[in-house]
Every structure is written in structure tokens, then in C-alpha cells.
Length: 117
Image (cartoon, rainbow, N blue to C red; front, side):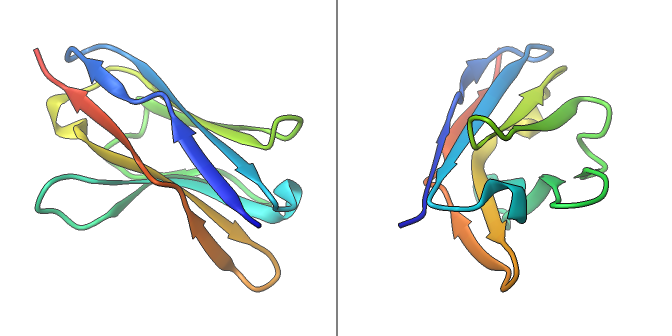
């Protein structure tokens, strides 16, 4: 059974930092693309960053230079380091796992990030 569990959200002031974690079990981590999405109130869910099985990581233009996605294969965990946070980064952040070869997608329950003074 696949489990995807996010953690690390919270309240932070503008300009601050947070690190989100996503631990996945029941998958072959090396054959899974890992990504972060977010959804603000009244908005559609959008891609934030993705770490593919092969190739370079990709970021939404709005977070380039501020957010970094990394993966730890020993822990089956992907991280999202968020720096220079802005109020518009406020959203529920979701971890997405997409396994090869079928591309089956799994989602975590989401973690709230609130950027406010």
C-alpha cells in the first residue's frame, strides 16, 4: 500500500523560510517522479516543483530562485526548501508521487503554509 505523508507547514513571516518534507512508502523511490503542488483558496492546484526520475528538476516561474526541491533516496523522502517567502505563497502544499512505468499518481493529504505578518 502506497502512503504519502507531508509535514513541515506552518505560519511564517514574509521573507522567512520553511522546509516541507514528504515521505513515501510502498513505492520504488528510484522509479518515481516526486513533485510539489499547491492550491490557494479559490484557485486551481498548480505545479510548484518536480524532481523527475531522470533529467533536471523543474520549477514554476513564480518560485524559481527561491524554492529548491531535493530527494533523499535513503529515506524515500523529498523536500521543498522555501526561502524568501511571500504572502502569495500561502496555500495548501501537496506532495505528488508518480510511479513508473504506468505513471500512477499518488497524493498526500496536504500541509498548510501561511505567509503573513
